[in-house]
Length: 93
Image 1: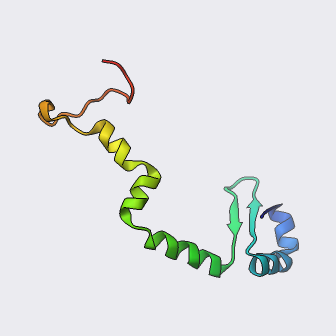
Image 2 (image 1 turned 90 degrees about the horizontal axis):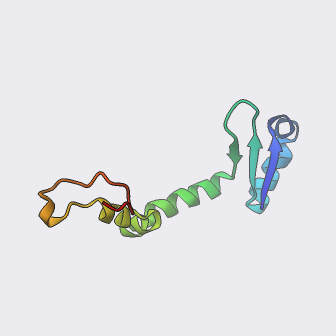
Image 3 (image 1 turned 135 degrees about the horizontal axis):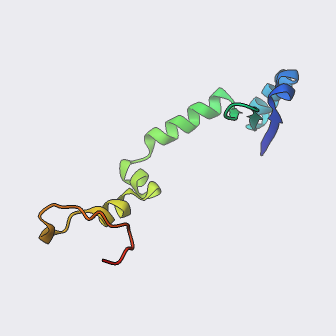
C-alpha cells in the first residue's frame, strides 16, 4: 500500500512514518509544493529493488522497455545503403 502525505505532515510524524515503512514494507509519497515529490522506503527494500534490477538479464530488460521493437522500426534496410528512414513509425511514404 502506498501512503501519501504532505511535507509538513511528514515532518510532524516522521518517526511514525519510518516505523510503518520498515514494519510493513510500506511506501510513503511525500508531496511538496514547489518541488518534485519524494518517496520514503526502507533501506532493505531499496537494496532489494536495486539488486533485482542488476540481476535481470540484459535481454529481459530490452524486452521490458521494447528496445528490440524500436530498433527494428529504425534499422537500415539492406537496400538502403545504411540510411535510416526519418519517417515516423507507422507513417506511409
